[in-house]
Image (cartoon, rainbow, N blue to C red; front, side, top):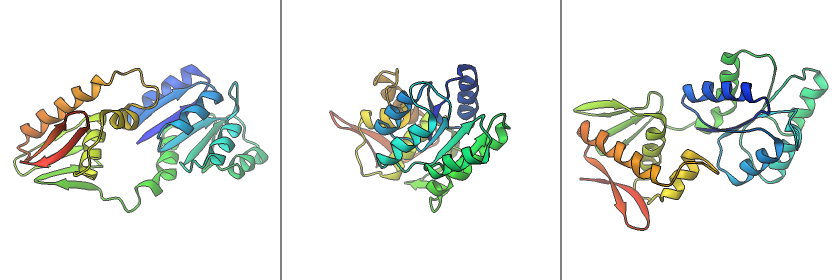
Length: 223
């Protein structure tokens, strides 16, 4: 799951990025409202955590802008303001929840899980293709002869492939969904992670393999 974090206090931002990453979220961090609007309107995110007091555009302006643009992703407003009127303004502007500083990191994670629950409601806890089962809860890739735990990005890549095994997914689609808008990573990182996954599929005795289609992308097939 990808999160856009907009927080201008860089020390706090770094701490929150580390927190989300440790809990298996992919995070892009920006430090002002203008960048938040750009990333959210042009990128593909599952959730946004927005500070209210930011340079260039405040969090409420960001929220109103993306809602007008038709973006329906869950949004958590994060702010030092605690007055009832401020909370009402945030919620009326389209926020899904509102958390005031200082806050417990456990509560922050719980709030994010709560507002993103609708995204996973009805989604199977695991995916199956061939003799492979991929757990969305534990990131375990299992076959009748073995199992291995995937890293966050390995999991996201294999989840994309297993969710639509007949679909060809381009390197650019992997980059956009997993590494994020305006990532500093080179497109070659996709090839590296494909190699990692191929080794792990072989190691557990999978009868599925990742097939490369020249000039198009990757798909799964049974061997």
